[in-house]
Length: 226
Image 1 (cartoon, rainbow, N blue to C red):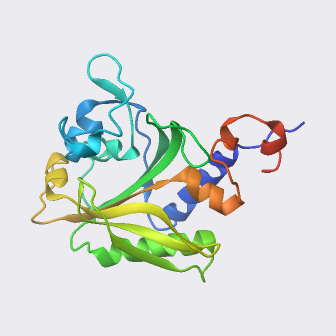
Image 2 (tube, rainbow, N blue to C red; image 1 turned 135 degrees about the vertical axis):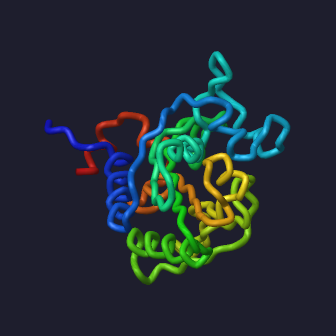
């Protein structure tokens, strides 16, 4: 039987194309990261409460299997200067109790933009455009405040899907200290950042009910995606 791309790969490629059309550069960063890139540079030090749920798969020399694609933010700016528009797709690892909506290994899609005079309006416009491209122009989108250590202010985006409001991604304006870690002058430049779970967005897009199904290599499931 002729093989096809995995549904996660297909959906990731779809997301990449949407953002490339908006002028974003696609960057790959390593799955094995240092403590600095994965936590400290994003204002999540060892004693921070937000680190408890992610302080998971450690290797030697203070290296960790990355828990979020946000780990690529500071790294990707080491050989770039603003203005930039970047997306970072990739696999992440957390100590999760697996069920229909949670997995220990899953895929994320990080994005950020840094330029002069970037505002929350730019963030909202970008995300609403992407969500409406994925789920149709009539989809209802709202945003609400939410705390994330590496953005200020932060917010979540929800969509009204199948008669329910569902949280689909977190976002916010990049914290000045994170810009400092990027060697970016926050008096001149501002930026927004967002992170979304590819698996959950894909589940809504294809109508998949269990996040574990794409990883089980069941040919009966996979052959539906051509």
